[in-house]
Length: 134
Image (cartoon, rainbow, N blue to C red; front, side):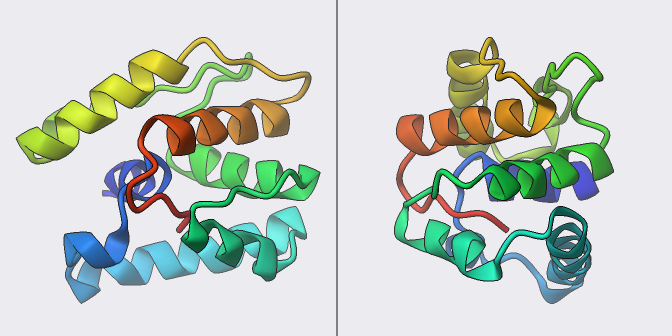
């Protein structure tokens, strides 16, 4: 379930538009709070993503990395796995997620935080409709 929430949040699909039930929002809020504390990023930078803007702030990459780590979606070498959860999404969402993950799968930065940020930036560019961070 955590992986599904990460995919929904990071692949650029608006939580509000998807009308996710409250019982799924609670785990996302817990992860958000934990990752804000772990990364040390200013929450304002995370909130800026609601406007389709992904600020270029190193700690924001670490915030995104935290979500990927909690979901077991990133390897030590920075490889991010989204395809494992495509079957959990509705066909239209899975199609968007598959397209975006294929387009952005080969991006690697100098650090795992950089890789997480650059990959998410690619998602925002490839699927800008409703893009925001959880």
